[in-house]
Amino acid sequence: MKIAKTQTTEFNDANCQAKTGKTLQQWHVELDKLGGLDAGRRELVSHVYETAGKDAWWSTSIVVEYERAKGQKEKDGRPTGYAICSTKTITATLDVVFAAFADAQQLDRWLGAKTKLDFVDGGTFSNADGDKGSFKKIRANKDIKFSWERADLAPGTAVEVLFADKGKGKSGITLNHSRIQSRAEADRLREGWSAALEALKTLLEKGA
Image 1 (cartoon, rainbow, N blue to C red):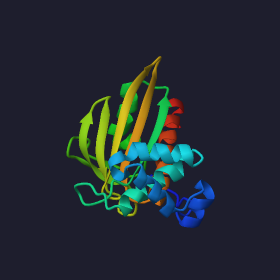
Image 2 (image 1 turned 120 degrees about the horizontal axis):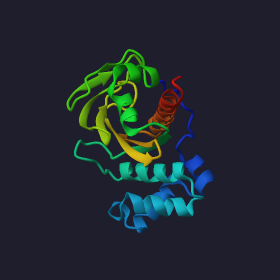
Image 3 (image 1 turned 90 degrees about the vertical axis):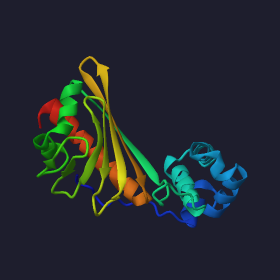
Image 4 (image 1 turned 60 degrees about the vertical axis):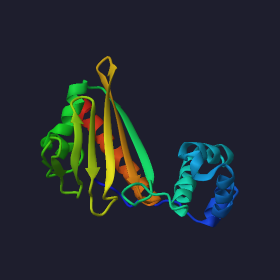
Protein backbone atom coordinates (compact mmCIF):
# COMPACT_ATOMS: atom_id res chain seq x y z
CA MET A 1 0.00 0.00 0.00
CA LYS A 2 1.44 3.32 -1.05
CA ILE A 3 1.39 5.66 1.94
CA ALA A 4 2.50 9.28 1.72
CA LYS A 5 4.16 11.13 4.57
CA THR A 6 1.08 13.15 5.44
CA GLN A 7 1.59 16.58 6.94
CA THR A 8 -0.52 16.90 10.09
CA THR A 9 -1.08 19.72 12.55
CA GLU A 10 1.46 19.41 15.35
CA PHE A 11 -0.12 18.31 18.60
CA ASN A 12 1.04 20.93 21.10
CA ASP A 13 -0.34 23.50 23.57
CA ALA A 14 -0.24 26.44 21.18
CA ASN A 15 -2.15 24.69 18.41
CA CYS A 16 -4.56 23.10 20.87
CA GLN A 17 -5.46 26.43 22.46
CA ALA A 18 -5.82 28.11 19.07
CA LYS A 19 -8.16 25.39 17.84
CA THR A 20 -10.11 24.45 20.96
CA GLY A 21 -9.76 27.42 23.32
CA LYS A 22 -7.89 25.43 25.95
CA THR A 23 -4.36 24.14 26.47
CA LEU A 24 -3.76 20.43 26.83
CA GLN A 25 -3.31 20.79 30.58
CA GLN A 26 -6.59 22.66 30.87
CA TRP A 27 -8.32 19.85 29.02
CA HIS A 28 -6.75 17.32 31.35
CA VAL A 29 -8.18 19.18 34.36
CA GLU A 30 -11.61 19.30 32.72
CA LEU A 31 -11.55 15.60 31.87
CA ASP A 32 -10.52 14.80 35.45
CA LYS A 33 -13.65 16.62 36.66
CA LEU A 34 -15.80 14.52 34.32
CA GLY A 35 -14.59 11.37 36.02
CA GLY A 36 -11.36 10.80 34.18
CA LEU A 37 -10.65 7.39 32.73
CA ASP A 38 -13.63 5.91 34.59
CA ALA A 39 -15.96 7.95 32.38
CA GLY A 40 -14.82 5.99 29.34
CA ARG A 41 -13.34 7.10 26.05
CA ARG A 42 -16.66 7.59 24.26
CA GLU A 43 -18.01 9.96 26.91
CA LEU A 44 -14.80 11.99 27.08
CA VAL A 45 -14.44 12.30 23.30
CA SER A 46 -18.10 13.31 23.01
CA HIS A 47 -17.63 16.04 25.63
CA VAL A 48 -14.56 17.50 23.97
CA TYR A 49 -16.19 17.28 20.54
CA GLU A 50 -19.30 19.19 21.66
CA THR A 51 -17.36 21.90 23.52
CA ALA A 52 -14.36 22.38 21.23
CA GLY A 53 -15.86 23.28 17.88
CA LYS A 54 -16.87 19.76 16.87
CA ASP A 55 -13.44 18.95 15.52
CA ALA A 56 -13.03 15.16 15.42
CA TRP A 57 -9.23 15.33 14.97
CA TRP A 58 -8.64 17.38 18.10
CA SER A 59 -11.32 15.78 20.28
CA THR A 60 -9.99 12.28 19.65
CA SER A 61 -6.34 13.31 19.97
CA ILE A 62 -6.92 15.14 23.26
CA VAL A 63 -8.54 12.08 24.83
CA VAL A 64 -6.05 9.55 23.45
CA GLU A 65 -3.14 11.59 24.78
CA TYR A 66 -4.97 12.13 28.06
CA GLU A 67 -5.21 8.34 28.43
CA ARG A 68 -1.50 8.06 27.69
CA ALA A 69 -0.65 10.74 30.29
CA LYS A 70 -2.71 8.89 32.90
CA GLY A 71 -0.83 5.68 32.20
CA GLN A 72 -3.75 3.69 30.82
CA LYS A 73 -2.49 0.57 29.06
CA GLU A 74 -3.84 -2.61 27.55
CA LYS A 75 -2.67 -6.12 28.43
CA ASP A 76 0.25 -5.84 26.00
CA GLY A 77 1.64 -2.88 27.96
CA ARG A 78 0.81 -0.26 25.34
CA PRO A 79 -1.83 2.50 25.40
CA THR A 80 -5.07 1.83 23.53
CA GLY A 81 -3.98 4.43 20.98
CA TYR A 82 -5.83 5.65 17.92
CA ALA A 83 -8.32 3.87 15.67
CA ILE A 84 -9.31 4.77 12.13
CA CYS A 85 -12.20 3.65 9.94
CA SER A 86 -12.43 3.60 6.15
CA THR A 87 -15.61 2.65 4.30
CA LYS A 88 -16.51 2.03 0.67
CA THR A 89 -19.59 0.92 -1.26
CA ILE A 90 -18.80 -1.04 -4.40
CA THR A 91 -21.10 -2.08 -7.22
CA ALA A 92 -20.18 -5.76 -7.16
CA THR A 93 -21.55 -8.84 -5.45
CA LEU A 94 -20.30 -9.82 -2.01
CA ASP A 95 -18.41 -12.89 -3.22
CA VAL A 96 -16.58 -10.84 -5.86
CA VAL A 97 -15.56 -8.19 -3.33
CA PHE A 98 -14.41 -10.77 -0.78
CA ALA A 99 -12.43 -12.61 -3.45
CA ALA A 100 -10.42 -9.44 -4.11
CA PHE A 101 -8.93 -9.86 -0.61
CA ALA A 102 -8.37 -13.58 -0.99
CA ASP A 103 -6.34 -13.73 -4.21
CA ALA A 104 -2.71 -12.59 -4.54
CA GLN A 105 -3.07 -11.50 -8.17
CA GLN A 106 -6.02 -9.28 -7.34
CA LEU A 107 -4.25 -7.81 -4.31
CA ASP A 108 -1.36 -6.93 -6.63
CA ARG A 109 -3.73 -4.71 -8.58
CA TRP A 110 -5.18 -2.64 -5.74
CA LEU A 111 -3.13 -3.01 -2.55
CA GLY A 112 0.51 -3.63 -3.44
CA ALA A 113 2.65 -5.48 -5.99
CA LYS A 114 4.36 -8.86 -5.58
CA THR A 115 1.90 -10.16 -3.02
CA LYS A 116 2.68 -13.38 -1.17
CA LEU A 117 -0.47 -14.78 0.39
CA ASP A 118 -1.55 -17.74 2.49
CA PHE A 119 -5.23 -16.90 2.97
CA VAL A 120 -6.14 -19.15 5.90
CA ASP A 121 -6.45 -18.64 9.65
CA GLY A 122 -2.87 -18.35 10.86
CA GLY A 123 -1.57 -17.67 7.35
CA THR A 124 0.51 -14.66 6.40
CA PHE A 125 0.70 -12.01 3.70
CA SER A 126 3.31 -9.57 2.43
CA ASN A 127 3.99 -7.35 -0.58
CA ALA A 128 6.68 -5.17 -2.13
CA ASP A 129 5.44 -2.04 -0.34
CA GLY A 130 6.29 -3.59 3.02
CA ASP A 131 2.73 -4.44 4.05
CA LYS A 132 2.64 -7.69 5.98
CA GLY A 133 0.84 -9.49 8.75
CA SER A 134 -0.94 -12.66 9.76
CA PHE A 135 -4.58 -13.67 9.56
CA LYS A 136 -6.33 -14.16 12.90
CA LYS A 137 -9.80 -15.03 11.62
CA ILE A 138 -11.37 -15.37 8.19
CA ARG A 139 -15.09 -15.84 7.56
CA ALA A 140 -16.00 -15.90 3.89
CA ASN A 141 -18.11 -12.92 2.78
CA LYS A 142 -18.35 -11.73 6.41
CA ASP A 143 -15.08 -10.50 7.91
CA ILE A 144 -11.30 -10.74 7.99
CA LYS A 145 -9.14 -10.01 11.04
CA PHE A 146 -5.39 -9.70 10.73
CA SER A 147 -2.36 -8.26 12.46
CA TRP A 148 -0.51 -5.40 10.76
CA GLU A 149 3.26 -5.80 10.96
CA ARG A 150 4.63 -3.26 8.49
CA ALA A 151 8.02 -2.40 9.95
CA ASP A 152 8.00 1.31 9.06
CA LEU A 153 4.40 2.06 9.99
CA ALA A 154 2.43 0.99 13.07
CA PRO A 155 3.66 -2.60 13.50
CA GLY A 156 1.79 -4.62 16.10
CA THR A 157 -1.59 -3.07 15.30
CA ALA A 158 -4.87 -4.74 14.32
CA VAL A 159 -7.09 -4.60 11.24
CA GLU A 160 -10.64 -5.82 10.83
CA VAL A 161 -12.48 -5.78 7.49
CA LEU A 162 -16.27 -6.19 7.54
CA PHE A 163 -18.31 -7.05 4.46
CA ALA A 164 -22.02 -6.34 4.00
CA ASP A 165 -24.51 -7.07 1.23
CA LYS A 166 -26.24 -3.79 0.43
CA GLY A 167 -28.60 -5.27 -2.13
CA LYS A 168 -29.10 -4.46 -5.80
CA GLY A 169 -25.64 -5.84 -6.63
CA LYS A 170 -23.80 -3.57 -4.19
CA SER A 171 -21.49 -4.47 -1.31
CA GLY A 172 -20.14 -2.46 1.59
CA ILE A 173 -16.69 -2.59 3.15
CA THR A 174 -15.86 -1.22 6.59
CA LEU A 175 -12.16 -1.35 7.50
CA ASN A 176 -11.14 -0.65 11.09
CA HIS A 177 -7.46 -0.26 11.99
CA SER A 178 -6.81 0.03 15.73
CA ARG A 179 -4.07 0.25 18.40
CA ILE A 180 -2.17 2.86 16.36
CA GLN A 181 0.22 4.63 18.71
CA SER A 182 0.64 8.08 17.13
CA ARG A 183 -1.62 10.61 15.47
CA ALA A 184 0.75 10.95 12.52
CA GLU A 185 0.62 7.20 11.85
CA ALA A 186 -3.17 7.24 12.12
CA ASP A 187 -3.43 10.04 9.58
CA ARG A 188 -1.10 8.28 7.15
CA LEU A 189 -2.95 5.00 7.46
CA ARG A 190 -6.33 6.67 7.00
CA GLU A 191 -5.16 8.18 3.73
CA GLY A 192 -3.50 4.94 2.66
CA TRP A 193 -6.52 2.73 3.30
CA SER A 194 -8.88 5.26 1.75
CA ALA A 195 -6.80 5.31 -1.44
CA ALA A 196 -6.50 1.50 -1.46
CA LEU A 197 -10.26 0.98 -1.14
CA GLU A 198 -10.85 3.53 -3.88
CA ALA A 199 -8.44 1.57 -6.09
CA LEU A 200 -10.36 -1.61 -5.27
CA LYS A 201 -13.64 0.06 -6.21
CA THR A 202 -12.17 1.21 -9.53
CA LEU A 203 -10.79 -2.28 -10.23
CA LEU A 204 -14.07 -4.08 -9.57
CA GLU A 205 -16.35 -1.55 -11.20
CA LYS A 206 -14.26 -0.54 -14.21
CA GLY A 207 -11.67 -3.30 -14.47
CA ALA A 208 -8.86 -0.70 -14.31
